[in-house]
Length: 150
Image (cartoon, rainbow, N blue to C red; front, side):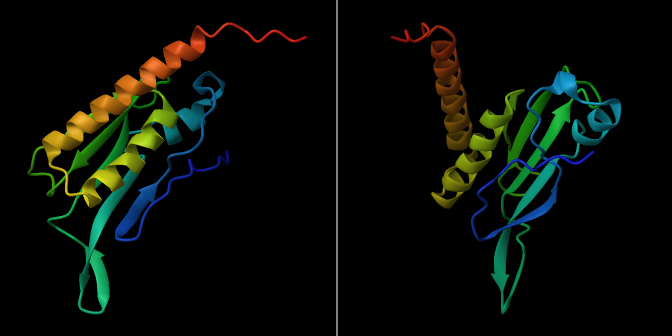
C-alpha cells in the first residue's frame, strides 16, 4: 500500500506538519484499506512559520492550511481545503472539490496569495476564480474534437 505523495512546491517559511496527500489516479481502484488510509479527515496540514531568534517556530498568528476528505472512508466524497489566516478563531477560506490536481494548484496559490498579504476575503475570491477557470478549461477539454491524423 505504497503511493507517491502529490508533489507540492512548499516555499520557505512553511512547515508540513503531516502529509498523506497521495496521488490517486482513480478512486474506484482503491482497496478498502487505502480508502480508510487516504480518504480521511486528516490528509495534510501546513503551518506558517516565524523566525524566533535563531530558530523557526510555527506562528500562532500565521496561516494554517488544512486538507481533509469529506465523507471520510468513502470514494464518493470530496477534498476540503481550508485556509485559516490567524489560527482557528478567524474567518476561513474554503475550497471543496474532488479534483486532486485542482486542490494541488489551489494549495500552491494559497502560498502566493499569503505572501502577497491577501485578506481572507481576497483569498476566497482567488480560490473561486481558480475553480471557475479550472472548470471552464475542463469543459473545453471535454468538447475538443479529436485531432485528425493524416
